[in-house]
Image: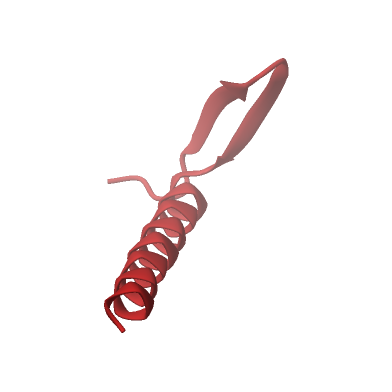
Length: 47
């Protein structure tokens, strides 16, 4: 798999381009923060 391959995508009217490795890293960080926030919210709500 070519981790340096540039991935092109569009958000709104802006065209974005970034390496595949950076895109996967951002997705992974986002998922970890979402899971952490859900777990903390559950812990806070159960008290």
